[in-house]
Length: 127
Image 1 (cartoon, rainbow, N blue to C red):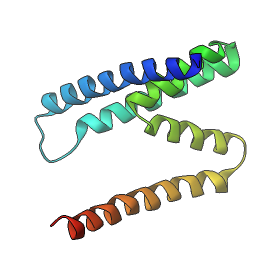
Image 2 (cartoon, rainbow, N blue to C red; image 1 turned 180 degrees about the vertical axis):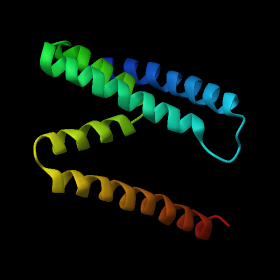
Image 3 (cartoon, one colour; image 1 turned 30 degrees about the vertical axis):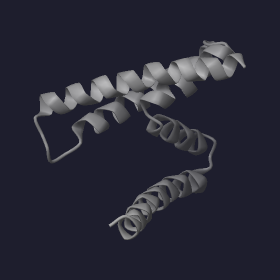
Image 4 (cartoon, helix red, strand yellow; image 1 turned 60 degrees about the vertical axis):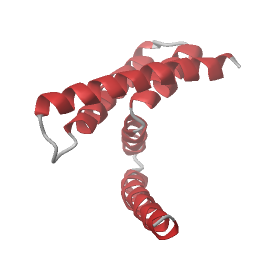
């Protein structure tokens, strides 16, 4: 139960940070043509998870509860792209180059396909 609470609290913090950082970057860019805010959030999240994962693995930082709060909660609320990036790099580091490539391709093709199909479906149902 504690881990669920920690993930939820962390998710709240990460979501608020995502909203704030993404909006700030998008405002600074003054662009309506490219999602700079989302790119910034994904880059920051991937940088943070890489740094913190390395510290957790090599220095023993973070208890199980702190990992739940930070990795699943805060970073998960901030951007799930960081989890995707970290998991892909972990596969690559473990010598699973093919699985890493499949993970990238599957996420791109299946997730973009899911958005496209669901938008087409919603258009057909609620037009």
